Image 1 (cartoon, chains in turn green, blue):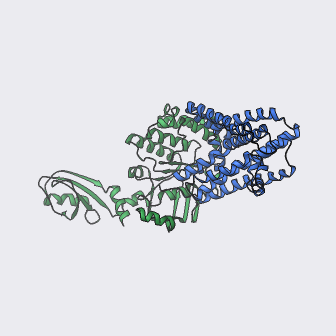
Image 2: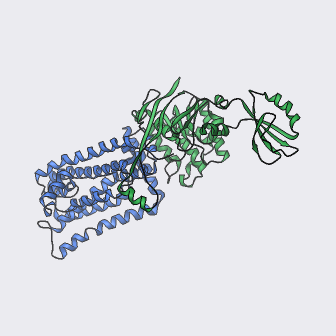
Image 3: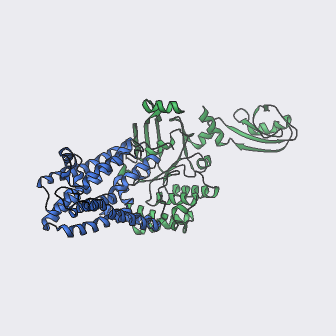
Length: 324
Length: 259
């Protein structure tokens, strides 16, 4: 069942071009050149209920603008959004009861007081019963292991602790859809893993997640589907498996050679990385040459001490899609 | 009922925030209380030197100014934070966190950012009103009812001004000078209307009805309210309604900032 449907979504901004330097500053004071920017430029997609969808894209691609429109915080310039039968910006008051959101760079917690006080405020705002509130809060604090943390003022919490509390704040009212805008930004490995585990757990219970991130591990570990946006346009929309196969069936073979090698290819495979004369990485197109055959004949061309075969790294796939 | 519960929960949050910085809370309120007591000194000095606002005794003028302070404080507590919080969150691009709440953004900002710092100002104004009224005397139950009507109207004007200024910040981001202009206009409400030229009197009672903030309610309490002044209740309420309408309208043009 489709939970989110966006059609020809456009968000345009008018901004002003200003030159640098004193002369240009004075000039821009009297006359400014208007510039129309299409932050999101005719995007359409559908997201299934109960899935995790990753929205990827380089900085300034339009990911956050898209997610803000999906949350109902921004009105689209044109196009339609249907989330669970709601038009997010138009039906905002009713709609936002059904969703949760974590903006990695915008806190919803109140800075000077403990998170538990912010939670209590949300309890009143969402009309959560005492019983549900206690049950949910106990469950979430246990999952994140923040039983004591929630009683300290927000300003003294570490970034990781704060993000966990942001999650609790967004999940207390049991939203059906949760939007995560760079939720693991700046976090250490342990905190990232904890957040990913909780997202996975909530997703298994039926919550739909829409996630923007620059951390490809978030996507690899969580997402069922991936939408890639670049320059405001959608450039990819399919499953994670399909994304992996976008560049064809390729594998990376890392070799530690016994003799120096400076060539550009070995046994028909392109050298794509070279740490030194001995440690090189090869890209093998397995559609042309199955890995087993490649490995069998590899010893005819070079001698090596060590070998490992890996999937094409996600960052390499994404970088190539961005640059297309 | 739901909104009352939410308002009380938000109020609790606002007091918790104030309590987090106890010294700032106490000093802030003390300073506004003191400045409120010192402010009427200018009026006292004017009268002590033989000058006067024609037709008004010193205590009557002090009553106008005290009521003005009370009305100002009440509006600050209700809507004062709407202006600064809206302005800051638009500039920082964090207004979406407000829009994520299933509430009117206006109500949420006003409730969650209740200005506890104005409590001192309100109490100071109230104390000065009681003291001034004890010297001037007040005009019976009718006068008090009229006072309440005009006082609420005055607070509505102040709230309306806050909302209009906050709404402007959606379009002109970072317009911190505009509140200063409105603050200057509000000053007209602190003095007996009769001392101003006719054009200013019309402006301050019908167009930008700041006379309803201090002068009209105090006049009602003194039994000196020109019954024609009651017409200013209408522009006062329209001012507030316009403030609410324009604020809600301007939310639609919120653009956020780069992510």
